[in-house]
Image (cartoon, rainbow, N blue to C red):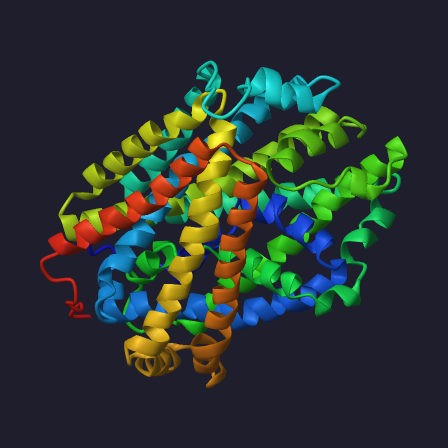
Length: 493
């Protein structure tokens, strides 16, 4: 893909939206809002969007467009930070290996939903018959061939799209998947809101509890949601922006991407809580008994709720198709974020780079297709996402705002080519507000990991796997940086 330029603004924006909108929007935001003040959570959430999500998106678009380079060399343009770009690429690859397995679960569940395969006990089906979860950590159990086969299909699709390049692959795929995702979500909302109790119950999601705004935990949770939902600080968006034609709008593209992602957060919240509140009304349970987050929400709670609807098979297929679209759009972005630096810097061709990343991702993801893959996934994700990505985001902002001396240059160049200029609030956020909250988020995540270890919530061996992945990515980044012959070279563009 070296040298390939985006053919249209719409293709670029849709691909960036596809990178941002993912599974986290559907199974993380509704629970975070419910637990952190309902409607009151929207205040810190949109504060985080305006002071972290949007400024960091503009920073990465500006950095990629200004240098014309993928993340490692774009970060090196800021100074001696090329290793940080490589580290983000390494973390993105690890994230892709286990993210692809979750997408494969969604693909399997499209078929399961056709036959309502979870029967009358969605919990027993998912953890027992589907995953065959082992008894404890490192009790890997049987190899799950259906899951691995679905993973092969996901990686084959990603390989094909990156093989085709920006215009024929990524842009066309997102023109199909994003409208399909939106249409499926809106249809699900409309159908679920007709169920008794669903419309009234959605008020639970947005009913404000302003007392919770006094808790710093709520504000930190909002920053965590925005950081992980927008896909900043993992190299992919810098890579996409590096292929923008000269003079392309920066500020407007970033604003459209971030606000569309936030809008989908809202839609996902309504869809999920319509299903959960309908379930609570029909079973006579209180809402707090059926609300869950993460894996259990998508594969246990929602299937149980769908069983109570007039058309469980149809809605089940549509729901898991929506999850597949959201997951695949993000997975393709991850693959491109890893493959592009290998193509442009290491010297691999487009096809070789894409095939190498996809084959390596399939091989790495095989470990998560065993019976204990869910526990391994949780341990690795807990370290890579909560510690690695947070620290990477913090270092990226600090490097740009405090050590490079080029933040003002990026600000002026972005304003010069954009439909609307941004004021000095952008500089203020990146220098003070964003690093403050990212630093607090990093500290809170470290404290939480220590608490989990002390409480014995995870097997020590699984925790070691998570830290080994994180430190392995860092070691690889430092080695790769030492091999880069010209890390600080700026593109002629």
